[in-house]
Length: 118
Length: 110
Image 1 (tube, chains in turn orange, brown):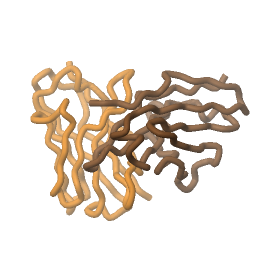
Image 2 (cartoon, chains in turn cyan, purple):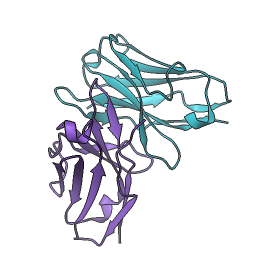
Image 3 (cartoon, rainbow over the protein chains, first blue to last red):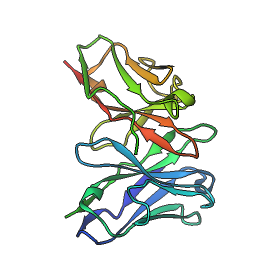
């Protein structure tokens, strides 16, 4: 069974930092692209970052570029999001997601971790 | 970032059908066959219910169906049930491994 479990959320001050983690299990982690998606309170879903299986390809939404860094440790089956220079508008539930293989959609999602910047 | 346009809410009585539209551009919905739909019960993990415009993952009820015409995709829920009450989001591939999401639609079962 595929499982994605996020952790590391919490309260941070504006300008502060947090590091989110996502523990993956039930599949060959290194062979899948992973993405972070967030949902601000009362708002819709927003793609945040992408990292390929080998970490060769990394992308960020314009709203977080230069402040957030995505990484992964395939030996530990883990995905990370280092969030620096946090702003109030970064307040959201952050979801770890696994992309499908062979086509383009987000096949599995974690339950999310709440980040509050205040 | 650009978003796909969905109605804020739709509602229907049990047993009825409802359809949610998702309007984008030729750079996303109209340009690819990779539209997906997600069901989200608040507090839980979102779940994919339609991928590649009209395909259902294993285990998803056949009451959910998807289609696309031009720059607009649609999700239809037939035989509406109380458990279908949730938020629904469309998403489209837009190239370079990136996606765009819809604004979200709250489905209410009357």
